[in-house]
Length: 187
Image (cartoon, rainbow, N blue to C red; front, side, top):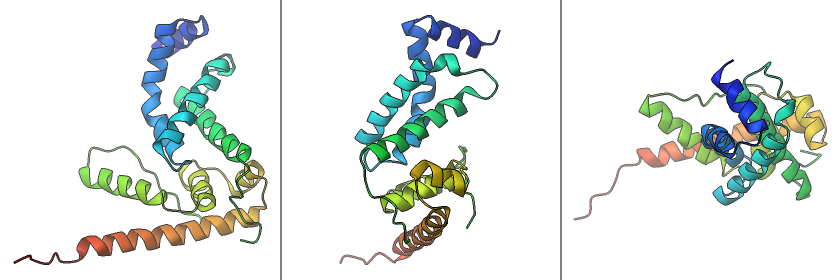
């Protein structure tokens, strides 16, 4: 029996230390997932807590066939989507292509900086764009799956995704241009 299986077994028995260990192992990465769907760290932390309540409530449903982290991630994404639906925000206009980015962890400081810059720039996108971009480019959902989740037309999803990519590219280019401006000497 693996350590993960033992940890899950202990969590299912109500062992508080095991639950804390599971939370601490995944909370950091899942906070990042939640933050991509919110406008503030406080909102992301609220989503994280709500998501972990669901994780522990539904842990018996985890069958071990996939990675535990992926299962938890899906719960976090679904929690974020459900919160968006509950808030009844009009995120996506009904009137309104496919490149994936993977912000993989790395020891290369330049890549970490680029990933951090992209993540912070994504926060500047309008809610609808940001959510569709996250679901498709980061989480890997298909357009039809996103349409079903958000209760919109697949054509609207494709349009939102394309607009998000264009706007994100423009924002990143603008930020890069700002960084390359020469600093005026104060004399």
